[in-house]
Length: 87
Image 1 (cartoon, helix red, strand yellow):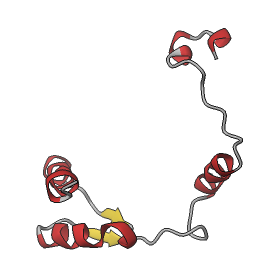
Image 2 (cartoon, rainbow, N blue to C red; image 1 turned 60 degrees about the horizontal axis):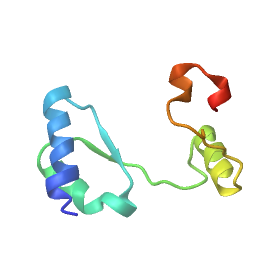
Image 3 (spheres, helix red, strand yellow; image 1 turned 180 degrees about the vertical axis):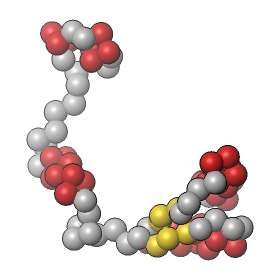
Image 4 (spheres, rainbow, N blue to C red; image 1 turned 60 degrees about the vertical axis):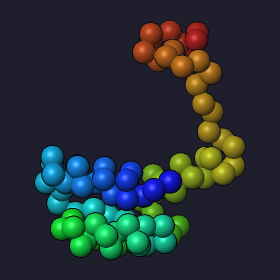
């Protein structure tokens, strides 16, 4: 995947349309992209992700996924129809 044609372009378009305040990124995955965006005028903020620094909700969600306790809806659209028997 060409990140310059996808992610960078998307963020540049968002910045142009919405005047983004700051773009947070994880340097482990986005350092090269962030450097290019910063050169193009986007305000970039490095935020390293770790278990220790995660929001409590994120930790809880990851635990649900990790231990197999997250139960997905069986049929897409059941909630929109309001039919609990479809769940």
